[in-house]
Image 1 (tube, rainbow, N blue to C red):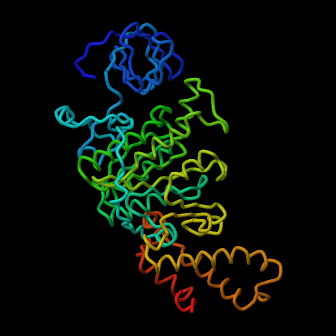
Image 2: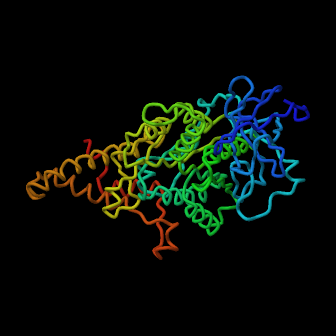
Image 3: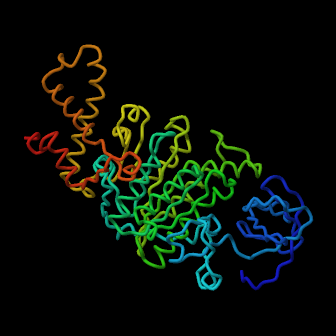
Length: 451
């Protein structure tokens, strides 16, 4: 629809929290269209659904509670759009593309020249899977590079309960991968703590990474409408750099479970009946809509790292399971591992990766990882036996594997670079080749074992 079209205005009929019902006698708006209250603030509304043919159920994005019944409403003719371009890099934005970093809004002349993109899913584009190269990105983290390799254009998830180190690990990966790859980074803070947003911003600034990073924040102080949209705004900018600028993009989303929670809250306030498990009836399409846009095509790639909060440490939670099914690699952080003082607190046996194959990481890496996993699985089963009869009663082979497993656990501990200013202890960075050499030194050459 043209922006020049003149539409008949609507009238605010009812207000209930963030839900506003607007009646249109003519020119009914479309789903996801932006409407604006005819007041001084031009308060923005987003059409969520249509009812009885003439009522638009709208969401009060800005949380403006000064809106009154009887006020007139103007259609925009388009859905929620944000400006996209190089000017967005190095700044912090909200879901509507407005700056929230204390710096001034972009000049109107600059905004007028920038492309405006709708944040809702564009027309389907087929991913160029046949042309996708499996380029391994080094994180510098031994346990991740060895068991859950990062591959350009794929989706990786960090799964764990509260306080096990998801955000700190994400900060470390941003620091290491962004520095090493030189790729453009986009960060979406979805419903997380304001303190964590400040810490991440300061960490990026201290490491001179802001110049290649655009940040979007819809933290837990924001209303659920903004929190549910912030991830889509970040993806819209990522798609611009991938498709128009033909760049490879790193997208970090913290936290995907908070995205589901925000969508659930929105579903509740518009009176949708929840599905089994208490989540919104659209939970499956909400996840798919988000994840399907994190794709690689002929223009470039989006490599996505997402954290997933696990409520009550329950990995069987339906929302957590649904998100995990969309990922290529899943890194599980365990409270039990964290309690042992191991950082990063990765539960190696629970973590999974479809990218750990000879075709992606090479034959040597694959065989070493397979053997190391087998030793660690044996270690877990032997711990119960040792608690009863003692280590001295094990066979020579079992004792050998048990000691190797303990060495592996110790080897995969690592200090974080981003925590150096807090702890005063220098961080570590290990190349993948050195990690393979270290594992090989512990468990021996696979070829010799197989003979």
